[in-house]
Amino acid sequence: MSAIHPRPRRRGLTDDCLVERKSVSADLIFQFLGEQWILVAALATTLTMLVLHETRKAGPALSINEAVQLVNSEGGVFLDIRDAADFARGHITDALHIPAAALANRAAELEQFREKPVVVVCKMGQSAGPATKTLRSQGFSRAQKLSGGMMEWDAQKLPVVTQ
Image (cartoon, rainbow, N blue to C red):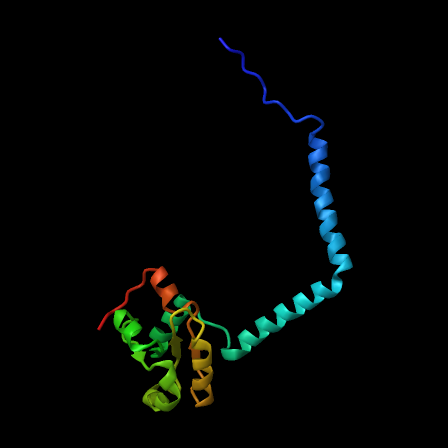
């Protein structure tokens, strides 16, 4: 029978030493922040400006649950602004299709929804912002974008229809 030996420890390394190493790295972080406060302030300012810019671009995005509830309860519509090929591969039931490039010229097709919620849907939730802004500038005050776009819709395994 062989005896079970405890795992050998590295020489000179104790639990106290490990705790001290963790605090040393925290001390280094605080030292860096103190010495480079201008860089930290610039980073914080840049991130704040980016968040504000994205929020102002088209307002806050609706979650999928909020969008479905809004469209169902208030007679709104989903507006899919993806290209025709993506739309044909699968879209939200009863969604209208106007490609983003044609939206400014074809917004009149949405006239019956001027006072109702218009939820703008794109592929990933990025290009819906400018489209929503375009609609709002043309009087569609209740236009909002869908957070995550069709990728999020698909990820939640919600139903889609194909042409």
